[in-house]
Image (cartoon, rainbow, N blue to C red; front, side, top):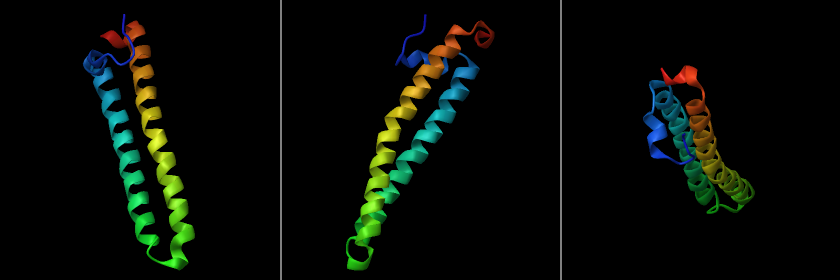
Amino acid sequence: MAALFDHENRTRTPVHAKTTTRYEIARTAVEFAAAVAFIVGSIFFFYDSLKYAGTWLFVIGSVLFAVRPAVRLAMEINLVALSGDSDNER
């Protein structure tokens, strides 16, 4: 029986591998967006007129960094659910 955070779930079947790839792409996109938000927010803090927008970019970046583990957990739950579905084991 598959368990959460078992690395073997990632390649158990071709469906598992494809699912893992999709979630990893999503997680990378979230990380990249968070980094961009923090970098742009940091630059905005050099200008008084942009500090308010910079603050919002920090908030958005923080939310995105919180989404990252949620994407990972969703992937793990999905992989375990796929392991329990006998149709996907082929």
